[in-house]
Image (cartoon, rainbow over all chains, first blue to last red; front, side, top):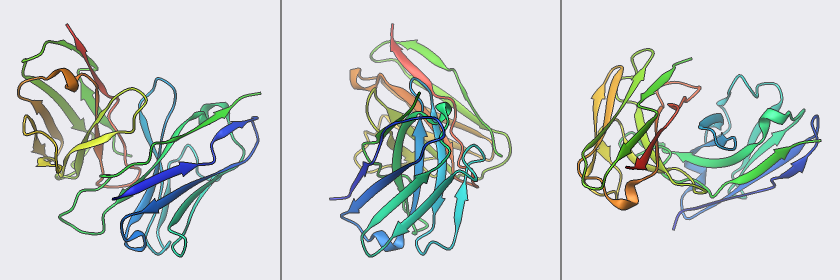
Length: 121
Length: 107
């Protein structure tokens, strides 16, 4: 069974740092591009970042570029998001989601349950 | 960046109704389009991928169509469990942008 489990959320002050983790199981993690998507309270979905299977290709939304760093450890089947210089507007539920390497298969077919990040003084 | 515009933003509907939600991309995205359903407090659930392919175990009352810049999600006969918020997403190029969402409410 495919599972993605996020952790690491919590309350942090503006300007602070937090690192999220996503533990993957039930599929060949090393072959999938992985993504972070967030959702502010009562708002829509916003794609945050993606990292290719071998970490060669990394992309960020403009809203987090220069502040957030995505990484992965294929030996541990884990995805990370280091968030620096956090702002109040970064408050959201953060989801990890997978992106298939196979042309005919669906992307973003599995998501974690999300972890809440609250940035407040 | 590619902008995704959904309409309507909300819809008051009844069980048994046929519902159509539209999504327009600011530039051509071929068929690189997903549709998601989201219920309160839950992660999004993939319904349709590649514009018209039905995700596994999703009821056949859901269908998608379109290519290029204009896309639609159709629910042929609305069921009680379908009252939720629906999002389109383009995966043609990063940033992978979402539409603003369409909330289906019970009339």
